[in-house]
Length: 188
Image (cartoon, rainbow, N blue to C red):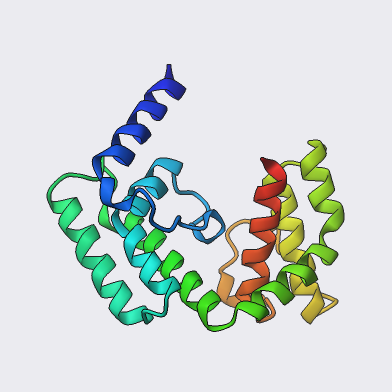
């Protein structure tokens, strides 16, 4: 019943905004980790056309301004199925940032995808075969990325330690995005 309800809700949202039927999709790897798929679909319907513009060269600030207005107005009009501004804004901002960055440096994304694929190929295989779940593989991939910068890095497992006191190396966010993308594809 829950799956049917989710399907019907997603279908209703998708058909209610026909102008975005052929608009760009939000890359799932750019979405915050704990957001619902339904909220991604709603954000996608609100800003898909804007993402098309970003893919064709629209800058971040004008794109974010348009997206912010679309999200704000939809929330006020109660057209977001109960999802609030902060969730939809975070999803949208991340997608705009990723599309803009991919527009500016497409070859860099390809290079980093190949590097990450080589780094976590065993994790990708484990997720595909079902021997490792996505979350465990993602955490291991993050550790490996950090260890490229600082080989002595070990993730903190203590509860309640303020992150400001942790020694986490500065890493390229594209590497993390590509790891999520590859592992999400493997999980399908």
